[in-house]
Image 1 (cartoon, helix red, strand yellow):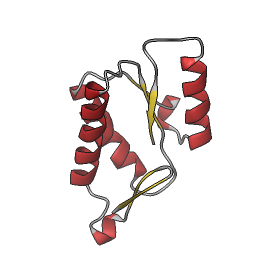
Image 2 (tube, helix red, strand yellow):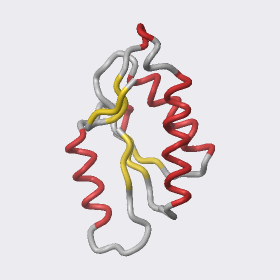
Image 3 (cartoon, helix red, strand yellow):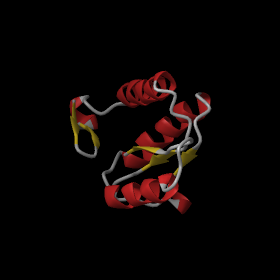
Image 4 (spheres, one colour):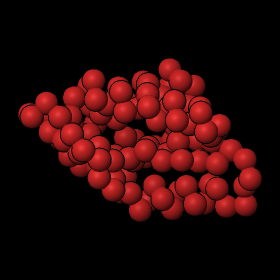
Length: 104
């Protein structure tokens, strides 16, 4: 398991990209946001890898359980990191509070 510039890296076949990992990582993001008093929405990206849809569903469950407003591509589509970055910049423009963050 490792982290890259666009999120968690691993393989379900090697046991490095599992439901438990996604649960733990997403809960850590929630805990960090709470500690840092980040209250804005979280923009969730998704790539085209085979396990992305399952990982997205697990992450959405954890985010919802923590009461975090989460925005994602309509219809469950794929969202490249630059699109997530642009959405965050647009959301945060001119704001002092309720700033958005990302998880992709």
